[in-house]
Image 1: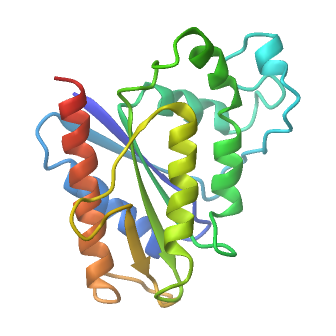
Image 2: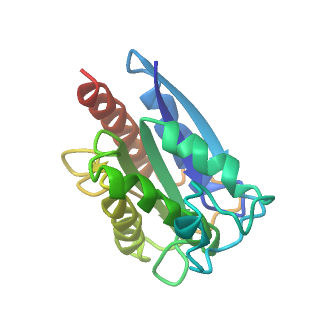
Length: 204
């Protein structure tokens, strides 16, 4: 079985997580795919301070923050065949929690130095949820794509009409469900299916 992990970068259990769950459900409809959702909500993830100890000590992970929650998540992500990152829009960009998560991939340079294509069959997709219809979702998705590009992932959108990723309009609804933004949730499902099919293609 191929594995896709969904990372929810929201501190709330609402639109961002809802959309990610729907994407992962759709991914599981593809034969040979299993999924796992990891929420960063309540997790202790210290941001990288770029001390480069991981590089100097050749430690895949973080030798400074060994005891926070990120090291376990980090290794799960490296072992997965695909990632779907999901973030609420913060100041036209990703959430601070997701930013800290991304920063902690510094030590992957150890793998990339040995083989620049080491993550070349890993697939990435992105979902952003904003309180307004045009609230920075595409800029937030672009930030997640830049993370994937840095590590050499194959980046996919959801095909026709969902070119970069799924943009969800939460309307700042305290009890978000599909009825708040049916188009956004349909696009999240399209994205999940496309990521899953791409993972299968990459491993044929």
